[in-house]
Length: 78
Image (cartoon, rainbow, N blue to C red; front, side, top):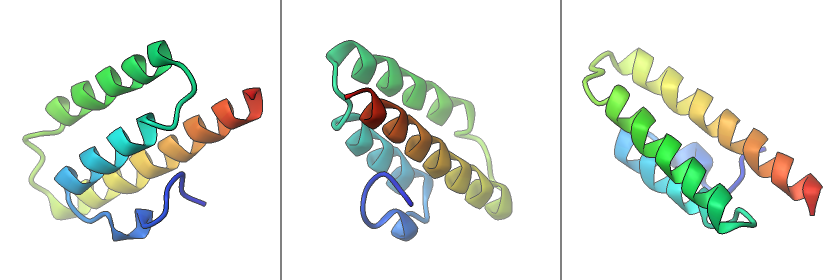
């Protein structure tokens, strides 16, 4: 299960970037949100030159799985 609806519609790196930033808005504390926003931006920069479509899809799937894990982690702490 993905953290937000329509995760299955994410097909490009820009869509992924926007999706992950929207996920950050749901995190409970500003310091946590800042941490994950920074991590998302850094990861986006690291993978900006990726041109293999298969690898890009793999990165997208993994990022959505990781976002799901993070969101579940902070939901349980409430």
